[in-house]
Image (tube, one colour):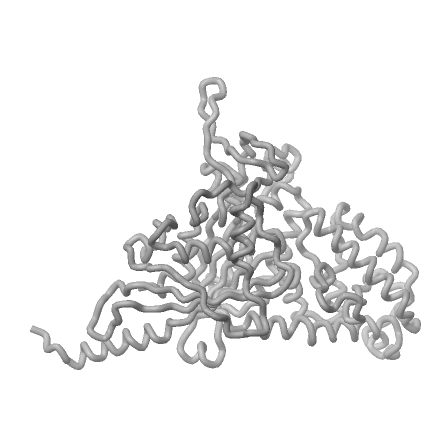
Length: 472
Protein backbone atom coordinates (compact mmCIF):
# COMPACT_ATOMS: atom_id res chain seq x y z
CA UNK A 1 0.00 0.00 0.00
CA UNK A 2 1.39 3.38 -1.00
CA UNK A 3 1.98 5.73 1.96
CA UNK A 4 -0.49 8.64 1.84
CA UNK A 5 2.32 11.21 2.00
CA UNK A 6 5.06 9.58 -0.06
CA UNK A 7 7.62 11.89 -1.68
CA UNK A 8 6.54 10.78 -5.17
CA UNK A 9 2.89 11.54 -4.48
CA UNK A 10 3.72 14.88 -2.89
CA UNK A 11 5.79 15.82 -5.92
CA UNK A 12 3.04 14.71 -8.30
CA UNK A 13 0.27 16.51 -6.42
CA UNK A 14 2.39 19.65 -6.04
CA UNK A 15 3.17 19.56 -9.76
CA UNK A 16 -0.52 19.26 -10.57
CA UNK A 17 -1.31 22.17 -8.28
CA UNK A 18 1.38 24.37 -9.83
CA UNK A 19 0.22 23.44 -13.33
CA UNK A 20 -3.40 24.20 -12.49
CA UNK A 21 -2.43 27.52 -10.91
CA UNK A 22 -0.35 28.41 -13.95
CA UNK A 23 -3.26 27.70 -16.28
CA UNK A 24 -5.85 29.82 -14.51
CA UNK A 25 -5.77 32.55 -17.15
CA UNK A 26 -6.01 32.27 -20.92
CA UNK A 27 -5.83 35.12 -23.40
CA UNK A 28 -7.48 34.36 -26.71
CA UNK A 29 -6.91 36.19 -29.99
CA UNK A 30 -9.82 35.91 -32.41
CA UNK A 31 -8.33 37.01 -35.70
CA UNK A 32 -10.02 37.59 -39.02
CA UNK A 33 -10.37 40.12 -41.77
CA UNK A 34 -13.51 42.16 -42.26
CA UNK A 35 -16.59 40.01 -43.03
CA UNK A 36 -14.89 36.84 -41.72
CA UNK A 37 -17.40 36.58 -38.87
CA UNK A 38 -15.44 37.66 -35.77
CA UNK A 39 -18.39 39.29 -34.02
CA UNK A 40 -20.59 36.26 -34.68
CA UNK A 41 -17.85 33.91 -33.44
CA UNK A 42 -17.28 35.86 -30.22
CA UNK A 43 -21.02 36.10 -29.56
CA UNK A 44 -21.42 32.36 -30.06
CA UNK A 45 -18.31 31.56 -27.99
CA UNK A 46 -19.65 33.47 -25.00
CA UNK A 47 -23.12 32.02 -25.51
CA UNK A 48 -21.94 28.39 -25.70
CA UNK A 49 -19.79 28.72 -22.57
CA UNK A 50 -22.51 30.47 -20.57
CA UNK A 51 -25.03 27.75 -21.47
CA UNK A 52 -22.67 24.78 -21.11
CA UNK A 53 -24.35 22.01 -19.16
CA UNK A 54 -27.80 23.51 -19.73
CA UNK A 55 -28.88 24.07 -23.34
CA UNK A 56 -25.67 24.29 -25.37
CA UNK A 57 -24.86 21.27 -27.53
CA UNK A 58 -21.11 20.77 -27.03
CA UNK A 59 -20.59 17.04 -27.59
CA UNK A 60 -17.11 17.54 -29.09
CA UNK A 61 -15.87 19.27 -25.92
CA UNK A 62 -15.02 16.54 -23.36
CA UNK A 63 -15.43 18.80 -20.33
CA UNK A 64 -19.00 19.56 -21.44
CA UNK A 65 -19.81 16.03 -22.63
CA UNK A 66 -18.70 14.59 -19.29
CA UNK A 67 -20.72 17.16 -17.35
CA UNK A 68 -17.63 18.77 -15.83
CA UNK A 69 -18.01 22.22 -17.44
CA UNK A 70 -20.44 24.05 -15.19
CA UNK A 71 -20.76 27.25 -17.20
CA UNK A 72 -19.30 30.73 -17.30
CA UNK A 73 -20.11 34.20 -16.08
CA UNK A 74 -18.90 37.60 -17.12
CA UNK A 75 -16.47 39.44 -14.85
CA UNK A 76 -15.46 43.06 -14.72
CA UNK A 77 -12.81 43.62 -17.35
CA UNK A 78 -9.31 44.59 -16.21
CA UNK A 79 -8.93 47.65 -18.48
CA UNK A 80 -11.63 50.19 -17.66
CA UNK A 81 -10.60 52.34 -20.62
CA UNK A 82 -11.75 49.77 -23.21
CA UNK A 83 -15.47 49.19 -23.95
CA UNK A 84 -17.00 45.83 -23.09
CA UNK A 85 -17.74 43.53 -26.01
CA UNK A 86 -21.44 44.18 -26.89
CA UNK A 87 -22.71 40.67 -26.16
CA UNK A 88 -26.17 41.73 -25.01
CA UNK A 89 -26.91 43.92 -28.09
CA UNK A 90 -25.65 41.07 -30.30
CA UNK A 91 -28.01 38.58 -28.65
CA UNK A 92 -30.89 41.06 -28.92
CA UNK A 93 -30.27 41.30 -32.67
CA UNK A 94 -30.22 37.51 -33.04
CA UNK A 95 -33.47 37.10 -31.07
CA UNK A 96 -35.27 39.95 -32.86
CA UNK A 97 -38.22 39.34 -35.17
CA UNK A 98 -36.99 38.85 -37.79
CA UNK A 99 -33.52 37.91 -36.49
CA UNK A 100 -30.58 39.90 -37.81
CA UNK A 101 -26.82 39.64 -37.62
CA UNK A 102 -25.02 41.63 -34.90
CA UNK A 103 -23.53 44.96 -35.92
CA UNK A 104 -19.93 44.66 -37.16
CA UNK A 105 -17.05 45.78 -35.00
CA UNK A 106 -16.08 49.45 -35.26
CA UNK A 107 -13.65 49.70 -32.36
CA UNK A 108 -11.71 47.71 -29.78
CA UNK A 109 -13.67 45.89 -27.09
CA UNK A 110 -12.91 43.13 -24.59
CA UNK A 111 -14.66 40.66 -22.35
CA UNK A 112 -13.54 38.59 -19.38
CA UNK A 113 -15.22 35.29 -18.53
CA UNK A 114 -14.72 33.01 -15.58
CA UNK A 115 -15.30 29.34 -16.41
CA UNK A 116 -16.14 26.90 -13.60
CA UNK A 117 -15.41 23.20 -14.04
CA UNK A 118 -14.75 20.01 -12.14
CA UNK A 119 -11.22 18.65 -12.67
CA UNK A 120 -11.10 15.32 -14.49
CA UNK A 121 -8.56 13.83 -12.11
CA UNK A 122 -9.01 14.23 -8.39
CA UNK A 123 -6.30 14.38 -5.78
CA UNK A 124 -6.02 15.50 -2.19
CA UNK A 125 -4.64 18.89 -3.34
CA UNK A 126 -7.07 19.20 -6.25
CA UNK A 127 -10.05 21.47 -5.59
CA UNK A 128 -13.58 20.20 -6.15
CA UNK A 129 -14.28 23.19 -8.42
CA UNK A 130 -11.63 24.90 -10.53
CA UNK A 131 -11.74 28.17 -12.42
CA UNK A 132 -10.33 29.41 -15.72
CA UNK A 133 -10.32 33.11 -16.53
CA UNK A 134 -10.69 33.77 -20.23
CA UNK A 135 -9.85 37.19 -21.72
CA UNK A 136 -11.10 37.73 -25.26
CA UNK A 137 -10.71 40.77 -27.47
CA UNK A 138 -12.55 42.12 -30.48
CA UNK A 139 -11.27 44.73 -32.91
CA UNK A 140 -12.00 45.84 -36.47
CA UNK A 141 -10.64 43.51 -39.12
CA UNK A 142 -9.64 46.61 -41.07
CA UNK A 143 -7.08 47.52 -38.40
CA UNK A 144 -5.66 44.02 -38.43
CA UNK A 145 -4.53 44.56 -42.01
CA UNK A 146 -1.92 47.03 -40.76
CA UNK A 147 0.19 44.56 -38.77
CA UNK A 148 2.30 43.54 -41.83
CA UNK A 149 3.30 47.21 -42.19
CA UNK A 150 5.73 46.72 -39.30
CA UNK A 151 7.88 44.58 -41.62
CA UNK A 152 8.33 47.41 -44.16
CA UNK A 153 9.99 50.74 -44.70
CA UNK A 154 8.29 53.25 -46.97
CA UNK A 155 10.08 52.06 -50.12
CA UNK A 156 9.35 48.37 -49.64
CA UNK A 157 5.73 49.14 -48.74
CA UNK A 158 5.35 51.18 -51.93
CA UNK A 159 6.75 48.30 -53.97
CA UNK A 160 4.40 45.80 -52.29
CA UNK A 161 1.30 47.95 -52.72
CA UNK A 162 1.89 48.97 -56.33
CA UNK A 163 3.01 45.64 -57.77
CA UNK A 164 0.99 44.58 -60.82
CA UNK A 165 -2.62 44.01 -59.79
CA UNK A 166 -5.52 42.38 -61.58
CA UNK A 167 -7.59 44.43 -63.97
CA UNK A 168 -10.65 44.51 -61.71
CA UNK A 169 -8.76 45.81 -58.69
CA UNK A 170 -6.74 48.32 -60.70
CA UNK A 171 -9.92 49.78 -62.18
CA UNK A 172 -11.14 50.61 -58.67
CA UNK A 173 -8.10 52.86 -58.14
CA UNK A 174 -8.32 54.61 -61.52
CA UNK A 175 -9.10 58.05 -60.06
CA UNK A 176 -6.07 57.89 -57.76
CA UNK A 177 -3.79 56.50 -60.47
CA UNK A 178 -4.78 59.32 -62.80
CA UNK A 179 -4.16 61.84 -60.03
CA UNK A 180 -0.62 60.78 -59.18
CA UNK A 181 0.44 60.40 -62.81
CA UNK A 182 1.71 63.99 -62.88
CA UNK A 183 2.94 64.12 -59.26
CA UNK A 184 6.57 65.18 -58.80
CA UNK A 185 8.02 63.40 -55.72
CA UNK A 186 10.96 65.85 -55.64
CA UNK A 187 8.77 68.97 -55.56
CA UNK A 188 7.71 70.82 -52.43
CA UNK A 189 4.67 69.14 -50.90
CA UNK A 190 1.31 70.85 -51.31
CA UNK A 191 -0.87 69.91 -48.31
CA UNK A 192 -4.13 70.29 -50.22
CA UNK A 193 -2.89 68.17 -53.12
CA UNK A 194 -1.64 65.41 -50.80
CA UNK A 195 -4.93 65.41 -48.85
CA UNK A 196 -6.91 65.10 -52.09
CA UNK A 197 -4.72 62.26 -53.41
CA UNK A 198 -4.86 60.45 -50.05
CA UNK A 199 -8.67 60.75 -50.10
CA UNK A 200 -8.72 59.32 -53.64
CA UNK A 201 -6.53 56.41 -52.49
CA UNK A 202 -8.82 55.79 -49.49
CA UNK A 203 -11.84 55.83 -51.80
CA UNK A 204 -10.13 53.17 -53.93
CA UNK A 205 -9.57 51.02 -50.84
CA UNK A 206 -13.22 51.38 -49.84
CA UNK A 207 -14.41 50.43 -53.32
CA UNK A 208 -12.06 47.43 -53.29
CA UNK A 209 -13.42 46.31 -49.92
CA UNK A 210 -17.00 46.63 -51.16
CA UNK A 211 -16.00 44.56 -54.21
CA UNK A 212 -14.70 41.73 -52.01
CA UNK A 213 -10.93 42.35 -51.96
CA UNK A 214 -8.96 41.73 -48.75
CA UNK A 215 -5.35 42.94 -49.11
CA UNK A 216 -6.08 46.58 -48.28
CA UNK A 217 -3.57 48.88 -46.55
CA UNK A 218 -3.54 51.08 -44.60
CA UNK A 219 -6.46 49.60 -42.72
CA UNK A 220 -7.30 52.83 -40.86
CA UNK A 221 -8.14 54.43 -44.19
CA UNK A 222 -11.17 52.11 -44.19
CA UNK A 223 -12.17 52.81 -40.59
CA UNK A 224 -10.28 55.92 -39.41
CA UNK A 225 -11.99 56.44 -36.07
CA UNK A 226 -10.65 59.45 -34.17
CA UNK A 227 -7.88 59.97 -36.75
CA UNK A 228 -10.21 60.96 -39.58
CA UNK A 229 -8.89 64.08 -41.32
CA UNK A 230 -5.52 63.99 -39.53
CA UNK A 231 -2.27 64.26 -41.57
CA UNK A 232 -1.25 60.81 -40.31
CA UNK A 233 -3.90 59.38 -42.66
CA UNK A 234 -2.86 61.56 -45.60
CA UNK A 235 -0.23 59.45 -47.32
CA UNK A 236 -0.18 56.85 -50.08
CA UNK A 237 2.31 54.61 -51.93
CA UNK A 238 4.38 55.93 -54.80
CA UNK A 239 4.51 53.54 -57.78
CA UNK A 240 7.99 52.57 -58.98
CA UNK A 241 7.00 53.66 -62.47
CA UNK A 242 6.46 57.20 -61.14
CA UNK A 243 9.79 57.26 -59.29
CA UNK A 244 11.56 55.90 -62.36
CA UNK A 245 10.57 59.01 -64.33
CA UNK A 246 12.95 61.06 -62.20
CA UNK A 247 15.87 58.57 -62.31
CA UNK A 248 16.60 58.91 -58.59
CA UNK A 249 18.98 56.53 -56.89
CA UNK A 250 18.10 55.35 -53.40
CA UNK A 251 20.70 57.74 -51.96
CA UNK A 252 19.30 60.71 -53.89
CA UNK A 253 15.75 59.77 -52.94
CA UNK A 254 16.53 59.66 -49.24
CA UNK A 255 18.46 62.95 -49.46
CA UNK A 256 15.44 64.92 -50.70
CA UNK A 257 14.41 67.89 -48.51
CA UNK A 258 12.00 67.25 -45.63
CA UNK A 259 9.33 69.33 -47.32
CA UNK A 260 9.44 67.34 -50.58
CA UNK A 261 6.54 65.13 -51.59
CA UNK A 262 8.61 61.95 -51.16
CA UNK A 263 10.03 62.88 -47.74
CA UNK A 264 6.62 64.07 -46.47
CA UNK A 265 4.90 60.82 -47.47
CA UNK A 266 7.73 58.71 -46.01
CA UNK A 267 7.60 60.64 -42.73
CA UNK A 268 3.85 60.17 -42.44
CA UNK A 269 4.22 56.46 -43.18
CA UNK A 270 6.80 56.12 -40.37
CA UNK A 271 4.60 58.08 -37.99
CA UNK A 272 1.67 55.81 -38.85
CA UNK A 273 3.85 52.77 -38.16
CA UNK A 274 5.19 53.99 -34.83
CA UNK A 275 2.15 55.79 -33.38
CA UNK A 276 -0.81 53.86 -34.81
CA UNK A 277 0.23 50.33 -35.75
CA UNK A 278 2.95 49.50 -33.23
CA UNK A 279 0.96 50.49 -30.10
CA UNK A 280 -2.03 48.50 -31.40
CA UNK A 281 0.16 45.41 -31.83
CA UNK A 282 1.99 45.94 -28.53
CA UNK A 283 -1.13 46.54 -26.44
CA UNK A 284 -3.44 43.94 -27.95
CA UNK A 285 -1.50 41.10 -29.62
CA UNK A 286 1.84 40.37 -28.05
CA UNK A 287 0.55 38.59 -24.97
CA UNK A 288 -1.97 36.16 -26.40
CA UNK A 289 -1.76 32.47 -25.50
CA UNK A 290 -4.03 30.97 -28.17
CA UNK A 291 -5.32 32.16 -31.50
CA UNK A 292 -8.03 31.31 -33.99
CA UNK A 293 -7.88 32.75 -37.50
CA UNK A 294 -11.29 33.01 -39.15
CA UNK A 295 -11.37 32.94 -42.95
CA UNK A 296 -14.32 33.57 -45.25
CA UNK A 297 -12.95 31.17 -47.86
CA UNK A 298 -16.42 30.59 -49.35
CA UNK A 299 -16.98 34.29 -49.87
CA UNK A 300 -13.67 34.61 -51.70
CA UNK A 301 -14.46 31.53 -53.76
CA UNK A 302 -17.80 33.04 -54.64
CA UNK A 303 -16.19 36.34 -55.70
CA UNK A 304 -13.78 35.01 -58.33
CA UNK A 305 -10.06 34.39 -58.95
CA UNK A 306 -8.70 37.91 -58.34
CA UNK A 307 -10.35 38.17 -54.93
CA UNK A 308 -9.41 34.60 -54.01
CA UNK A 309 -5.72 35.26 -54.75
CA UNK A 310 -5.98 38.60 -52.94
CA UNK A 311 -7.27 36.87 -49.80
CA UNK A 312 -4.42 34.35 -49.91
CA UNK A 313 -1.87 37.16 -50.14
CA UNK A 314 -3.44 39.14 -47.28
CA UNK A 315 -3.60 36.14 -44.92
CA UNK A 316 -0.06 35.00 -45.69
CA UNK A 317 1.30 38.45 -44.84
CA UNK A 318 -0.86 38.70 -41.75
CA UNK A 319 0.18 35.40 -40.20
CA UNK A 320 3.83 36.41 -40.46
CA UNK A 321 3.05 39.21 -37.99
CA UNK A 322 2.32 36.91 -35.04
CA UNK A 323 4.82 35.35 -32.69
CA UNK A 324 4.31 31.59 -32.67
CA UNK A 325 6.23 29.09 -30.60
CA UNK A 326 6.11 26.61 -27.79
CA UNK A 327 5.37 27.97 -24.33
CA UNK A 328 7.31 27.43 -21.15
CA UNK A 329 7.15 29.17 -17.78
CA UNK A 330 10.05 31.46 -18.75
CA UNK A 331 8.55 32.41 -22.11
CA UNK A 332 5.22 33.04 -20.40
CA UNK A 333 6.85 35.52 -18.03
CA UNK A 334 9.32 37.19 -20.36
CA UNK A 335 8.60 36.43 -24.01
CA UNK A 336 5.08 35.04 -24.42
CA UNK A 337 4.13 33.34 -27.67
CA UNK A 338 1.01 31.89 -29.22
CA UNK A 339 1.42 28.17 -28.54
CA UNK A 340 -1.70 26.76 -30.23
CA UNK A 341 -3.47 27.88 -33.36
CA UNK A 342 -6.75 27.10 -35.09
CA UNK A 343 -7.65 28.16 -38.60
CA UNK A 344 -11.34 28.02 -39.36
CA UNK A 345 -13.35 28.44 -42.53
CA UNK A 346 -16.51 30.23 -41.46
CA UNK A 347 -20.07 29.96 -42.82
CA UNK A 348 -19.96 26.15 -43.09
CA UNK A 349 -23.76 26.26 -43.01
CA UNK A 350 -23.68 27.92 -46.45
CA UNK A 351 -22.69 24.62 -48.09
CA UNK A 352 -24.08 21.13 -47.68
CA UNK A 353 -22.39 18.78 -45.14
CA UNK A 354 -20.82 16.61 -47.85
CA UNK A 355 -18.72 19.65 -48.86
CA UNK A 356 -17.30 20.44 -45.41
CA UNK A 357 -14.18 18.31 -45.82
CA UNK A 358 -13.47 20.02 -49.15
CA UNK A 359 -13.77 23.40 -47.44
CA UNK A 360 -11.10 22.38 -44.91
CA UNK A 361 -8.78 21.06 -47.62
CA UNK A 362 -9.22 24.27 -49.60
CA UNK A 363 -8.46 26.36 -46.50
CA UNK A 364 -5.26 24.39 -45.88
CA UNK A 365 -4.23 24.90 -49.50
CA UNK A 366 -4.95 28.62 -49.23
CA UNK A 367 -2.61 28.92 -46.22
CA UNK A 368 -0.12 26.27 -47.31
CA UNK A 369 3.08 28.30 -46.88
CA UNK A 370 2.46 29.74 -43.39
CA UNK A 371 1.13 26.36 -42.21
CA UNK A 372 4.33 24.64 -43.37
CA UNK A 373 6.41 27.06 -41.33
CA UNK A 374 4.22 26.68 -38.25
CA UNK A 375 4.30 22.89 -38.34
CA UNK A 376 8.05 22.91 -38.91
CA UNK A 377 8.36 25.06 -35.79
CA UNK A 378 6.33 22.50 -33.83
CA UNK A 379 3.31 24.75 -33.26
CA UNK A 380 0.11 22.66 -32.96
CA UNK A 381 -2.31 23.75 -35.70
CA UNK A 382 -5.85 22.56 -36.39
CA UNK A 383 -7.91 23.38 -39.48
CA UNK A 384 -11.68 23.09 -39.38
CA UNK A 385 -14.88 24.45 -40.85
CA UNK A 386 -17.56 25.90 -38.61
CA UNK A 387 -20.67 28.03 -38.46
CA UNK A 388 -20.61 30.18 -35.34
CA UNK A 389 -24.35 30.79 -35.59
CA UNK A 390 -26.21 28.43 -37.87
CA UNK A 391 -28.40 30.07 -40.52
CA UNK A 392 -29.66 27.09 -42.57
CA UNK A 393 -31.23 23.65 -42.20
CA UNK A 394 -30.33 20.52 -44.17
CA UNK A 395 -32.92 19.18 -46.57
CA UNK A 396 -32.97 16.73 -49.50
CA UNK A 397 -34.47 17.10 -52.95
CA UNK A 398 -35.35 14.28 -55.33
CA UNK A 399 -33.95 14.87 -58.80
CA UNK A 400 -34.61 12.08 -61.32
CA UNK A 401 -34.70 9.48 -58.57
CA UNK A 402 -31.50 10.75 -56.92
CA UNK A 403 -31.65 12.34 -53.48
CA UNK A 404 -29.48 15.47 -53.39
CA UNK A 405 -28.64 17.42 -50.19
CA UNK A 406 -29.79 21.02 -50.15
CA UNK A 407 -29.99 24.00 -47.80
CA UNK A 408 -33.16 25.66 -46.54
CA UNK A 409 -32.72 29.22 -45.36
CA UNK A 410 -34.02 32.76 -45.50
CA UNK A 411 -32.07 35.32 -47.51
CA UNK A 412 -31.23 38.73 -46.10
CA UNK A 413 -34.14 40.16 -48.09
CA UNK A 414 -36.56 37.77 -46.36
CA UNK A 415 -37.08 35.18 -49.12
CA UNK A 416 -37.13 31.51 -48.06
CA UNK A 417 -35.08 29.45 -50.51
CA UNK A 418 -34.13 25.82 -51.02
CA UNK A 419 -30.66 25.92 -52.47
CA UNK A 420 -27.75 23.73 -53.56
CA UNK A 421 -24.76 26.13 -53.82
CA UNK A 422 -22.52 23.69 -55.68
CA UNK A 423 -19.34 21.72 -55.06
CA UNK A 424 -16.34 23.23 -53.31
CA UNK A 425 -12.92 22.34 -54.79
CA UNK A 426 -10.61 20.52 -52.38
CA UNK A 427 -7.53 22.30 -53.74
CA UNK A 428 -6.64 25.70 -55.15
CA UNK A 429 -8.91 26.26 -58.15
CA UNK A 430 -7.42 26.17 -61.62
CA UNK A 431 -8.48 28.28 -64.57
CA UNK A 432 -11.14 25.84 -65.76
CA UNK A 433 -12.95 26.07 -62.40
CA UNK A 434 -13.39 29.81 -62.75
CA UNK A 435 -14.47 29.45 -66.36
CA UNK A 436 -17.11 26.88 -65.44
CA UNK A 437 -17.99 28.58 -62.16
CA UNK A 438 -20.58 26.30 -60.62
CA UNK A 439 -20.36 27.59 -57.07
CA UNK A 440 -22.74 30.27 -55.87
CA UNK A 441 -24.21 30.67 -52.40
CA UNK A 442 -26.66 33.15 -50.96
CA UNK A 443 -26.20 35.14 -47.78
CA UNK A 444 -28.75 34.07 -45.17
CA UNK A 445 -30.18 35.76 -42.12
CA UNK A 446 -29.91 33.93 -38.77
CA UNK A 447 -32.52 31.30 -38.01
CA UNK A 448 -35.07 32.06 -35.27
CA UNK A 449 -33.76 30.53 -32.04
CA UNK A 450 -36.39 29.37 -29.54
CA UNK A 451 -33.82 28.70 -26.79
CA UNK A 452 -31.10 30.93 -25.43
CA UNK A 453 -28.31 28.65 -26.72
CA UNK A 454 -27.36 29.47 -30.31
CA UNK A 455 -27.31 26.70 -32.96
CA UNK A 456 -23.87 26.13 -34.46
CA UNK A 457 -21.64 23.79 -36.43
CA UNK A 458 -18.42 22.63 -34.72
CA UNK A 459 -18.08 25.50 -32.25
CA UNK A 460 -17.52 22.76 -29.66
CA UNK A 461 -14.57 21.42 -31.68
CA UNK A 462 -13.06 24.90 -31.86
CA UNK A 463 -13.53 25.48 -28.13
CA UNK A 464 -11.96 22.10 -27.33
CA UNK A 465 -8.89 22.84 -29.42
CA UNK A 466 -8.45 26.35 -28.02
CA UNK A 467 -9.00 25.64 -24.33
CA UNK A 468 -10.01 22.01 -23.76
CA UNK A 469 -6.58 21.12 -22.34
CA UNK A 470 -7.10 23.80 -19.67
CA UNK A 471 -10.32 22.18 -18.47
CA UNK A 472 -8.88 18.87 -17.29
